[in-house]
Amino acid sequence: MSNLKKLAGQTAVYGLSSILGRSINFLMIIVYTEYLSKEAMGSFTSIYALIGFLNIVFTYGMETTFFRFTTGKNLDPKKVYNNTQSLLLTSTVVLGSGLFLLAPWLAQWLEYPGQAYLFRWTALILSFDAILAIPFAKLRLENKALIFAGTKIFNIFLNIFFNLLLIVVFPYLISNGTISEGFLGYRSDWGVEYILLSNLLANGLIIPFVWWKAGFFKFQLEGTVIKPMWKYSIPLLFMGLAGVTNELLSRFLFEYVLPPNFYAELTAREAGGVFGANFKLAILMNLVIQAFKYAAEPFFFKQSADKNSPLLYAKVMHVFILFCTLLMIAISVNLEWMGPLFLRKPGYGEGLFIVPTLLMGYLLLGIYFNLSIWFKITDQTKYSFWITLVGAIISIAVIFIFVPILGYMGGALSTILCYFVMCLLCYLYGQKYYPIPYQTAKGIFYLLVSFVISYLGFYLDLGEAVLNFFAKNSLIFLYLVMIFLLEKEHIKSYLPKSKKL
Image (cartoon, rainbow, N blue to C red; front, side, top):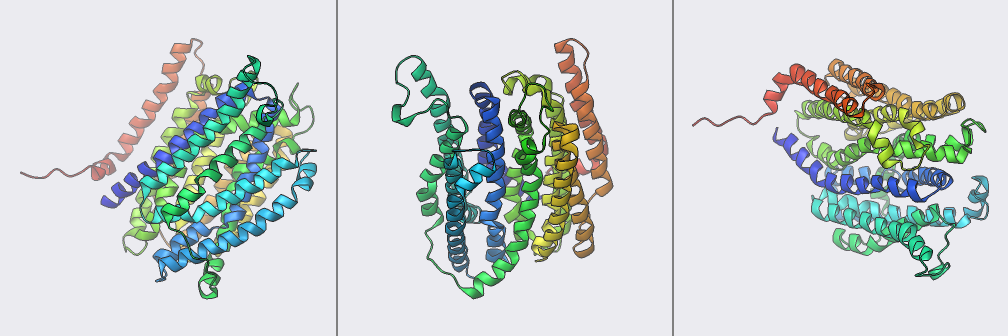
């Protein structure tokens, strides 16, 4: 239990930056839906989906590779750090320059005529993220959680500051005559531009500090170090692409796949904005998964040498499922008031019904992350390629088949179906090559019951708002009671044993 407590403690610290930062970003939905048009929200949804996808390409699994080669390969950690950062810096210059030069073509192809600067800024954002990845990973490996969390939080607040300044404050000052249109080059017709510019400024400003705290590196590219790292990381690139394919590709493709006039009085890009805004509501599940991932990845690798590690991994998975299913229910049954609170303008609430499905999709993503530990610690990352390929095919197929028929729900289904199949394949291969005693039947039971309860609570309508609120939230209590009755023996084992006097 000391190991579980240690993981929980690290998750809490890393979660401080991840959950606080992403929660603040989540709250920016209020600003974006209040001050930006649905078309600008559509652009925001599409471009940031592209950024999320390309971010995986720019880092190509090097964070996980760095953890593996500094903890389980008997190599000098300093040499691994130098080579990893040097390799990533080199590839970033190549990829970033290529994207920068292709910006005019991308703008035309993605229907942003005359806005090539959007994709030049995108190239810089991706480059800054990539050259910060390994220094941040080194801080995690060295258990410098407070420095890591503090820097992440500062970065988030910088981003929010620039967003509020450019989207809220400047327009207000212009409207009351304090400053004039064109002040410092300000343009009132810009929307998504200021979101990108804020991100770019915030990331660029923290680079010197992060490099200083992580330790400056010596440029080294040694074949004996890089070749095995490269071999290990490339399959992880495909695994990462699978994750973002399901999570982001639906948001990127939605406006291009949706038939014209599918939704009355909405263009395809505006409908994409509605879809993306409702997708943001499901980010509350992703907050927990991201915080868990920050702490769990180095923790799992460090525990891999312990003969009891499979049992520990199974316990972590079970607790993860219990917590996340409870969270899914809590969010779903409260969407009636959460939706209007965060999605400010009329029309966004039309997509609320997809949120429970998206929450389940994120939950399956977290389960997949737990399951994938077997091929990471056994150096069998080649399996991630095939699992990824199947997941990507399913995601793309569902988007093209069901979005034209079901609209918003078609995009949400691509999330849940892709991750379900990936979890199934990862579990079956994992039990063959690295058996872990998961409580599979019980876990599936919790997933199915919680999903049904989530939609039951979402659609429950007793007429009066107060009565509705208490009736919906009583479902959370009923689920907790069920967990207690089924898990009471395990709960006792998790509690600290009292010392005899």
